[in-house]
Every structure is written in structure tokens, then in C-alpha cells.
Length: 114
Length: 114
Image 1: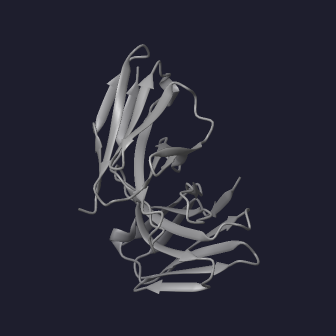
Image 2: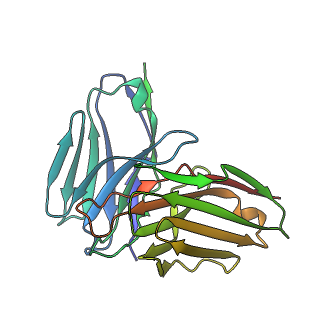
């Protein structure tokens, strides 16, 4: 099955600086890579996702890059704000028209220092 | 309606009790999922239903019994649980035939087994 590694486990950055979280996956068949943000006591919320036929995707301050050859993908958050503080999970799965579940990384606790 | 709802929000049960968790969505999604999330850990896939049929069971103990009575409802029946089963149980759904691969998560049921 799929295995997703995520680093770092904790990331502390100054407000306004950029944050980068990295993930690697093991199954070369995986073709969908979402990133979820989870605040304490709340549900995971999708913040951005990327499919394997795309190398990069951007949505305002958030971007994701994918390197299929190396089997790794990264989340980039620019101009960080206090409300970005949360746990971020990367995930991977093969979506082939069926309904496969997500395999999550262990999470990164992002702390934005004011 | 773009929301997944779960009831109850909190549940405390003894090891000899039988209880059920309920998940509902009215987005027309034909894939529904149960995940288990322990504190400070990522969600772990338990079951996947595709078009009301169980398609994935991630070797979950038989004390957890899923049921999908119709395309909007997903239940998780609990019996003879152990204290280590205490966790947040998340339901998710997605449209397996649609253009988006996004899984929409419910708020979860926080289960405590005493």
C-alpha cells in the first residue's frame, strides 16, 4: 500500500515569512495529492490539491509543487499570517474513477510567531 | 447543501455497550468513507463505500461494523469496544464520477470508551 512521509513535524516561522512543508510518497500509481489544514477540534479542510498531470498549482498565498520522478510534493505558504497556525496534512491516493481512500502523512504543526 | 453532518458530536460508551455513529450528506456523492483519528495523529482509513457497496475494509476489527443504507447515509455500528478505540471518527464523501477528487469531511464524532 501507499506510504506517505511528511517533514517537518513542527515548523515555526515569523509572521510574514514563508513556510514550506515536504512530503514523499511510495506508490508510483498515486495520482492525486491533496493538502488539508486542521485546526484544533475541527475537521480537516482541503486547502489545495494537485493531480499527477500537473507540476505546480497556485491559489493566492498557497502553492503546491509535484515531482513525479522523485515522488515528492511540497506545500508553500507565502506571507504567513497568524490564522495560518494549524496542523497541515499531506495525502496521496490513486483516483481511477472508483473511490480509494486517502493515505495521510503524519502532519506538520505550523506555528506563526507574531 | 455542501456539508457532511455527523451525529452525535460526542459519545461516551462502556466496553459492553452497543452504539451507532451516523453520517449524512445531500450532495449526491456516491463514495463515502470512515476514518479514525487518534490525538495528534493523522486520519486513518477504515472503510470505503462506493455506490452503497463496501469496496475497502482496511482490516478493521469486527467490533466496528459499517452500513450504507442509502446513498445519503453512512452508519458505523460499535460493539464491545476497547479503551484504545477512543478517537475522533470522521466521515467523508466525494463524487466518484465528478471532475473534483476532493473528499469533504464531516466534523467528526469524538468517542470515549470507558
